Length: 563
Image (tube, rainbow, N blue to C red; front, side):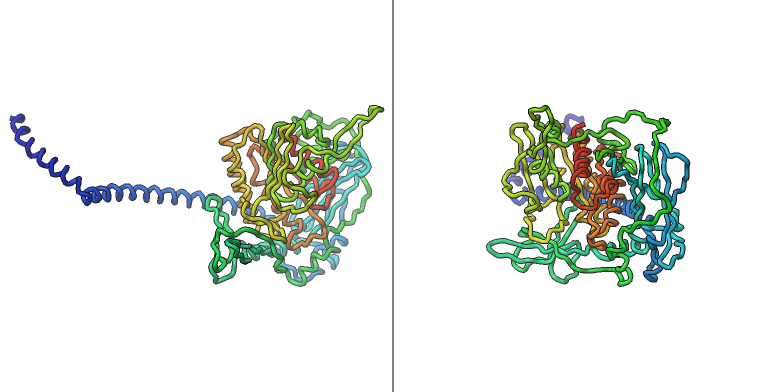
């Protein structure tokens, strides 16, 4: 019975198939089915896109949450005081310094504690903290020095802790860099705008050019060009030129806006005579003895991933000694050749890293044995510039390349991307954020990447710096996934000249960035070069440190690089 029914439907099925086949040759019929399937496919794509966008929103909120977390942690250290009058601000000359842990004998391995009691210009005791204090302990005849760690009791009293690392006569310096009233004003000023430096962008195409205002925020009703990195949530803007596309932005330069968010009374706090003033002491130098009772356990060689304490080291015989590891001292051409042979070195940052490539190509020493078997030093080169005929700081914004063909050494320097405080136009087409530059590297055991940033960010809110640092960390994490044996070194910024404009680029802004950088790069397999601590320890108040300080920064960097 079932067989008969099946046979009965066969002609009907064949007829339907014939009609369908005939209709299929009609293009409208094909278009109809294509539309159905395409609609289904587009629906799925839209759904997938929506899901990705939801995920991206979640990632964005996580990044912003981390930025806020670090910012809030630092903001808690900032005093919230209002300057009523200059005379009620902290006075270094009226304040007092004395030994808090008086002893008959001070031994290597112990700690010397100096107490600071702060007073105002009316000689009244301060009842709150927040002063910015810079301190160091040193023995000039030994080429020895170490920075002090400041403990704020938030009542006008501070303890400065100095670890004792060497035997001999030590002197103490404790400077009131800025009073708490000034710190509160600087913090408010920094976050009152999106920068006290502006920018001009030059657009060029088809023999036309235009110079337009640029920045992180533009107060304009004109059409703007947005230069957005959606993955890193970074953006800057320029007013769009009337007859040129946004893609024709070719050059950039900084312009001083000459803006200030300080009151006249607050501005007095930052006159040179009121910055970095020594606090009087009621004691003379201290004698430190080697009592043979300190722990002198062997330290490992400095390697990436190690945690850097505060202070992170000290100078002795003008050479930096990290307290947590052993540094290799690099000084001569031969020292650096042994480290860099067969390697690619990428320097990404500002002029404080450009100083590295300048050293390799212009200033390095080499040793030569004389007839009486003594060592003689002369200037030499680790590598030679490619297509750069100048010397020193000429065209310092340029990307630089140096090569040593015999030793197979490749060295490049690139700036860290917008913002850059250059008051002459520089070629902007090649600008990329540090994170994007890292993403372009394959990495490998013969690849070294050294990164710094700081000096060009002091003019802008701290959020921007934290975001950039976090994005660099994320890029490094991506790099380690594809090439875990790549060497990455983070160099903190240096202190700078005492005469630097305090509100715009003063060292307090650098200090908050230093705190942020330490926070961001915890728990990741990078080398951390604490140039900030080295600069304070050696009292080097210059953005491009010379001599022993720079030599130790280089040595620490390449100890990590060639571990």
